[in-house]
Amino acid sequence: MNKPTTNRPTFIPKMYCNLFGHHYQVTKKVTYHVKEYTCSHCKKQLTTNSNGRLIELTPKFKEINAILERIHASRMERSKKKTLASSIY
Image 1: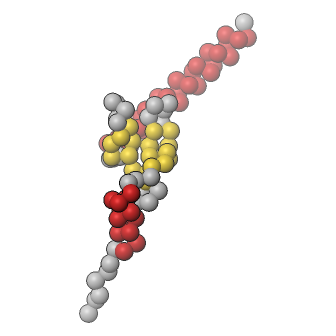
Image 2: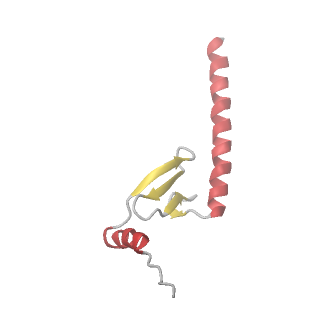
Image 3: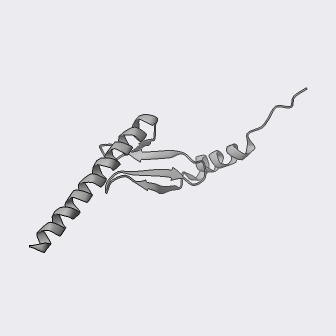
């Protein structure tokens, strides 16, 4: 007969967050204003939405953040080239 498995390792961090609140750390800087956060205890992931509020990081928002990061990186690269070209003349 199989013994039921208990989820004690995942239960304790969730209980800690329920009592004391989450301890979010920035895991990824997408742009200057958009960041991804992860709770160091329960591993819950959040991101900022268009209004600047924290919301749960769903696959839809992961895709949006990846596109934003790509656009932001290309703009920063173009602005660096523009700055270098203008400083030469």
